[in-house]
Length: 370
Image 1 (tube, rainbow, N blue to C red):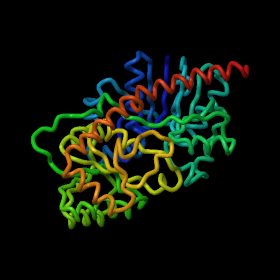
Image 2 (image 1 turned 135 degrees about the vertical axis):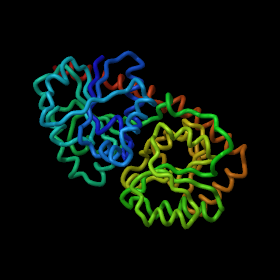
Image 3 (image 1 turned 90 degrees about the horizontal axis):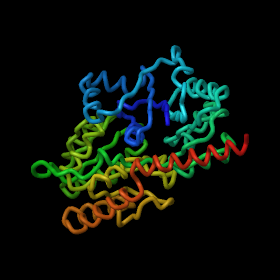
């Protein structure tokens, strides 16, 4: 099967978490012998920021970590859509593309029904900024892949498109698996995430910074878009700030720490209940004990208290951290159960199986309508 994918970036994960899942899916498709082409805009902000701040060497680091993966850069005004989509069987367009690109691919599909065309939504904008999603012309698309039930239902309830499926993110277990630590642990707690747009600043203080300070733990934060005030706060509280961390280096960093913490952004708690980001999948796949700030797994993806612990407030986070720091048996129980859950249900191989099932069903529906 020939698959063409339009995404913001395959190469850069600077403030771009969608690259994590994309890499895993592309790697799995290639492993199964499919012809895959990924296109990303030449002037994409994630790749551009990465190059400006860190230079070409980090791009080379991506190719060393993913030797079989490659993307083609394009400029929208010179993109030869006929050439790019010639012979395609499946085309997936991610929601973090320009509306003009989304419309251009849709227009091509109106004239060429030989391939399936799916829109992939992995953001909270459908719930928090629906006007932004309404700009997308999806009339010629065959369906939507949504990373949660509530996002799927949003498309169906608004009549934006006749078909939508839930397609959760998952761990790329070719990269995210337990590693042996080199030397003694570097710290007690590691948190990997971007500070962002004040979507969880208060939560980071309540669930991470204050508990770490209260217990006197050794901790490191990694991520981008940290304001100077946040960096100063970390320094005052004795927390190391490590800056941007390439996602393919995360498993090695996890191996050097005892515990990691997940702090969901406010929009996911309030507008997208039950929709996890990819971070918990990756942490569990790496075999590090995980504590999540308040989050309700309404879709039953995990088994809270068995795969990871949930802290509903800062006081409960302190107790969970104290327990896991002092109780290696409890840490081991969480690691074993979490790894089993990922390996049985939540790898990119599972998601590719689901994608093929969706495509099979969709072809049957389209033939029935012909």
